[in-house]
Image 1 (cartoon, rainbow, N blue to C red):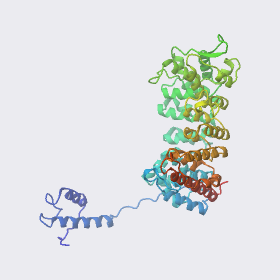
Image 2: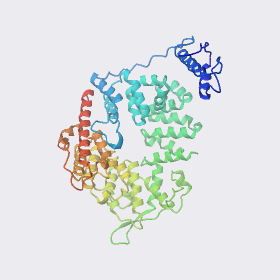
Image 3: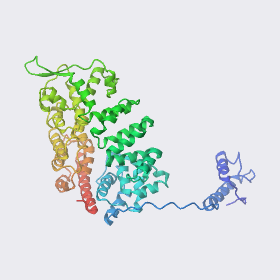
Image 4: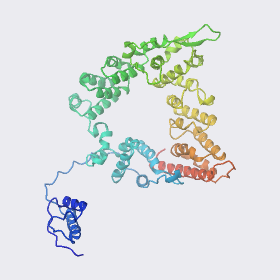
Length: 538
């Protein structure tokens, strides 16, 4: 290369060279060079010299202090096979591909949450060599963070303090990994509560609440008046754990808080205590709005919604301003019923059972509003008896019980039932209504799915396949089945792996897609079984 001898570079030359390259050598020449036809070559030579200098040169500096070692992790090490599996899950991530066609390979990243849950249940520690990849995976997926950080343990927090890309681990961990003081040391507890960062104080309050609910509440009282509104809301929310009647006096005082959100949260917590004074006040208001109509041959319910939202109602958590498109009176009425203990209606309406109450006709189109409020009350109060009645039978017309106004409402009601009962109800729903409406309900069922539910899902998928339906319409359910179906069901699916004969009205190519989807399902189930065996899970 024809070049001019380059002078020794000086500090700041790199920025000067970049500027020269952007402007062009016709308008500007490198430092120390003269304009002319050799200027472009001179610029490249200078850039090459500066690049080597920047890579190899290092000015002497005072040695930094070595970081403190990470806190020890006393949990047992992963079995060798499980450690290899984790490395595969973190590094081999097949994409879904274009056009929506996934092939027969399992989606390993969708299995990672399940693997982490199983590893955490067994109490294993993460291999140190896997921590960077694990933190990178959690960085990209917020849903993965709780299980990933639990598995990663204290070393993840140590690494997060050294790498800004992993700082989310400090934010996601209460107290940012700060060691909490001995709860039997009141001086240190009080010092951290008075002087600690907000995250540290939240972690301290949660730790005390888990072991000594009354002590946590008393600690909160000491600084309540001086806390910021957003902090009061977070602290108040911590009282959900171990909520008892002893918390009522403090929550009653919070009803007068200057923050509307704090007042609303206090009212919600009090309404979850069926014997609280707020619940009694709401019961009086709601009961005055609903009565038995005895003027007809068959008894029914009549509703007279409130005509105003007075200051007492607002203090007890009723939001006065209705959302757009919602009538004020129905808005107030729904809030009153939602906050009323459900046992009130059995006493108020002549000793009738929940089933008898819900079966009563409701005059003047108030039925949907009343039943929807009862649904919300059943969810808030975790009342399984009322939830069963409001759900109705799975085979009811349009899949709705008398009070289930939407799939979202039914999913919430199902959450109040035990796992087995929940699975049985959804299995009946699928058998009667098919899979098209069941996706949201499947999401609230325990994993792995109970045998009746798993069989119902597979049978419905098989029916859809035989009918020549578009397989892409069931991709969401198929993905759920891969993660939630009992791995023991894999052997039952072998007969579904062949490409079915396509009828004249079937979607073109549907048979091949269905066979591919079932092959992926079987492969995934067998992989999940192997994962469980490697972890020693039952």
